[in-house]
Image 1 (cartoon, rainbow, N blue to C red):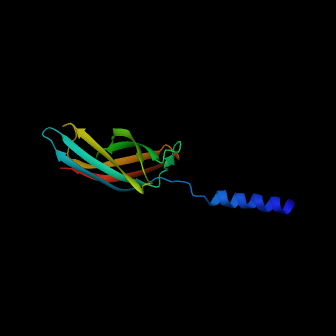
Image 2 (spheres, one colour; image 1 turned 45 degrees about the horizontal axis):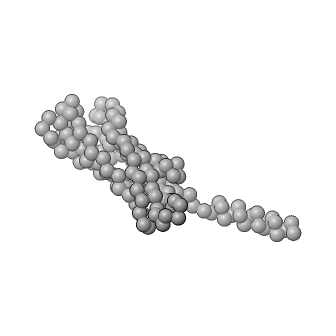
Image 3 (cartoon, one colour; image 1 turned 180 degrees about the horizontal axis):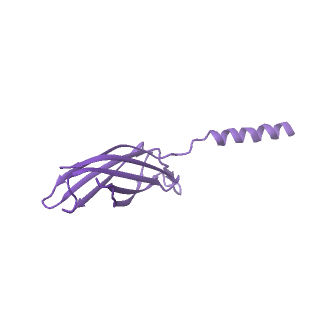
Length: 139
């Protein structure tokens, strides 16, 4: 009887340690700037994969909940919290990745130069987070 109990406990431990936890991973970030008279408009995006997708109350829908922050680093290394938000979505089937988009307007106080756009994305269901940056040139 003790051997069966020990084998059962070991089996449970192996099974639970082998289950893969979701881990949010960012990839393929892009940023483009357009002059709009006395300022700039920036369109930036990043793709996320590996985030948790949960079913709620037998609804046959998969829900995602991603929070994001977009930081802008100037050529002088000043950091601006340029944008933030949430992507809360439901689909009929699990999805492989999700695109997160940001549109930012900058006034004429932002001079030409090399900037950095940083995306920070947190999966609220798995509590995992990832960060990815991309270069942006204002000319």
